[in-house]
Length: 276
Image 1 (cartoon, rainbow, N blue to C red):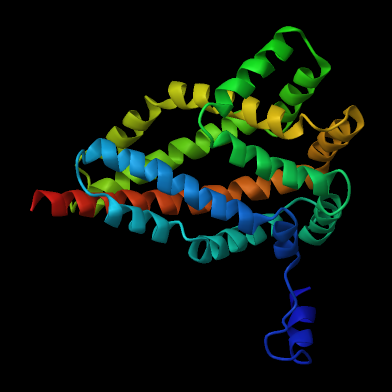
Image 2: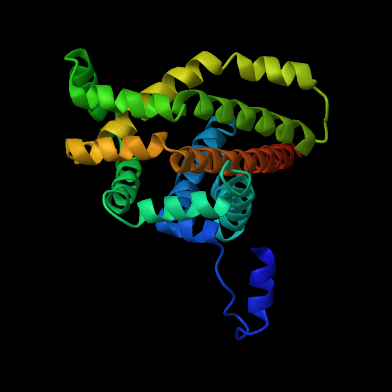
């Protein structure tokens, strides 16, 4: 496939290079809009951390640093490349799986679900929304509703809890490592100490992850009818759905680990400048 693409480039006008299938998949899931949202979330959470660690300090410079580190123009290309590599490794081949994924994301109900997921994520960033949605979902779950059962099945099929927890722990470890090395104090805690410190956070991270996923999935998929929801679950169970899920998590793990390290190092430098 790559040889064919290289040959085609010889006949295409400059700048008209064929788009990778993996990029078409990511565009179908509106990845640019997602990364704009992720940048906003990272800046907000980084400012909270800055206010906690540097009380009373002007955080305007830190806010600019956070925005720069999480700039989609910088982060998204790395994510696209990591996703492409992960999809290439998918069982059955990237072309077959990528085509099936793209077809699903551009036809009902997949195309509608993309929009619902983005809207749900944006809504959950508003104060009080997550708590309200979670409370409503817990009532549905206690009543044994078919919808609650479907939500739980979707989360389990995609291993969303463990994968998100693992990614968060790795990101936290990278942040602490960056914090040490950015302060020019590598090995202050030691690798074992960093891992021990991060592992202590696991129960709290798992609990918050479970709550957020329950709120997110129930809010995003609430508007779907039963047939649409079952179609989405069936896609998630398919080889293409599993390849998509694996590639997304692999790409996010790559990008977020690098970002967390860079954020820790940047914060360390800022803290050091405060001490001068």
